[in-house]
Length: 208
Image (cartoon, rainbow, N blue to C red; front, side, top):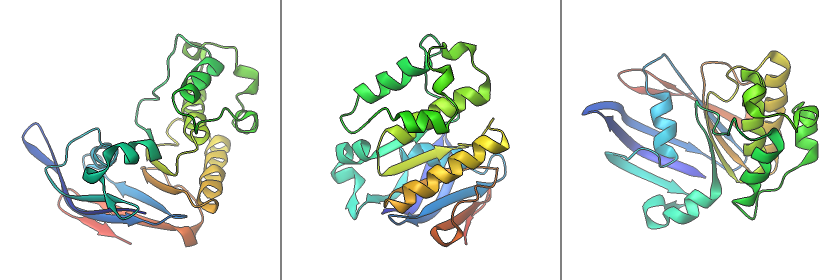
């Protein structure tokens, strides 16, 4: 479980996220919504450790992240607005390189096939469409075998078919005890019984 209590994040001397508390149990997803400027991307980046917290507490599986940051980093897969893949490498080279960085990561042919990437494996990423590049980035997350996924606009640039594929991947991850926290402006129709929602406003968060 990931839990956060009264998080505050500042950027450029300005408070972007203030007083946000959240939790996501194993086998559950938390989907974060909000208007542009409400702090969704900033919150996801802070949860991933890419931005410092001005105040508040963050815990993973009951252990404060500050007490064991290395373990937390080992357990999370992050996808930001940018895809985090190299345009100079092929699809397979990108995924093989990502898998080589962590012993738990495994390049899964069935994931490539379901993502529609098998036929694109030898193509350089800079030749792909934006939606195809996003599918490569999502496949990297899936193949990471990390229990915690932190995702910023994961279905951005995906067509309806690809978005449905990734929603099915989220459900499969939850079914194996994984945890997903995703910030998005686009609905993610994951299993409603396993999904909570957090709505951010520019003044205060509202959980449902």
